[in-house]
Length: 608
Image 1: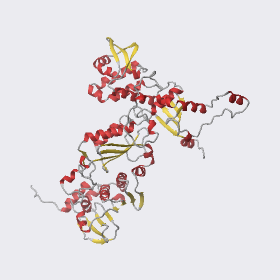
Image 2: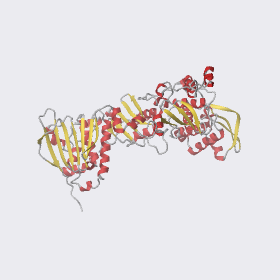
Image 3: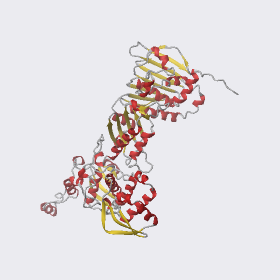
Image 4: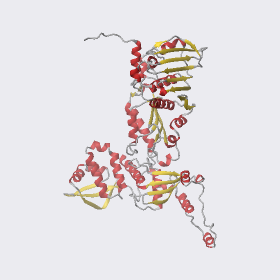
């Protein structure tokens, strides 16, 4: 049986197009909001009923639509945003396809009211299920108001795929939040089922992030603003050690003001987070990428949710390095609330490759910087008597003579960000007092990150300095370890190991990486040989370089249950303040936790 080929009706064509453009109420809301923004609106009001399935109304104060152009506004492939094919190579507007209104009007009871400022009054055109009504005078201030009632009322097959009102409302709410976040200079309001949910005045980017994402997001944010020729990436990332369990959305990514899901960009961000993520943690961020419209193709998806880049690799590298620098900012700088991350440069005076007398916990320049403050801090903390008169007065019964008083916390402006150590708990945690209150540090996790960053810096110089052992250490090796040591001799030398075969089943360690000279030599060597054997090819070793260095750092870090002196604890705190990614260990776990005085007061119900 053959079927005749015949053209489809305009109404059926519009309904088919609606399946691509208007998937659900949130899709229609997105198109309407984008049209308002393209119309240069400064104030946008949204009203929804039953999650948008019953009503979607978007009113704006934009430039409006001329009376004679209202019928064209609801016609297929009619738009004011492009004129010729070359315009598609540099889209500068959010909407441009010219089919959204026609699609909505074909599957709803649709009303369009608009007025240009020069007109005496507004004009209205109604459409019901694709049937266009007559132009009629209407009352409206300058701008446009579009109402979409009973979405999919005439296409029951589509309507049955809508979810519950609560689910559709959640999608609409998230669409509204994304667009409001991307355009802080515009005032937005959202009303659902006659209840006001959001009313945000026009503001700056920082305040809009606070309005949409909340105070917790802003408090945890690390801000960045990177530029290179005609490309810019700005916004903030959330350091994973602080977590973001209360954040509604894990990420917000915008390209030229448009919320997108781009696999390449998301992969770049995930790779930048790789060195600080723990387990199944996911990155949290809000980032705006701005670049020449000619370098990005936004016409890659019917709903414009995806984009393609002309030079994807350059955009990838730029995004990756910008986010990585923000996450690498040392703890000492992030706690001073720096809002802009500049490209980090290494200070050679504080370089981890500098020669140290002792590797374990060296007291370097950062620690020496607070030497005077340290002395004064402990004198006041432990009430040290410095003169015989004070001691005599105390023996005479004057209990106040030897009483030292710590200044108020706000007066201790010279205290370092992580403060000064006061005790060690169970040989695992360091307790320190800083400006905010009590700091608890996992000493092994913190030192592991410090060693790891030192190893990465040394490896970047193409080789890790080796420290020869005074007496070679021989140990019994299994056949796989013997074969691996022989096969990867060059790689081991680059890593700072000097290993030779001393017998049929014996390996001799003659040198270790200088940065790990205090580590358990045999355990460290076996761990490295195991990694080299598991990964096999040289290319894989290079790709997993950081994992190999992390293994080495774990064996070189100070072990739990080792008793540290106060100077050693303070040296560790100072090193943490000047170490990139010092807030997380190599496995993404937090290295320290802050407990503020307010939290301690609440715990003990002080002031109640």
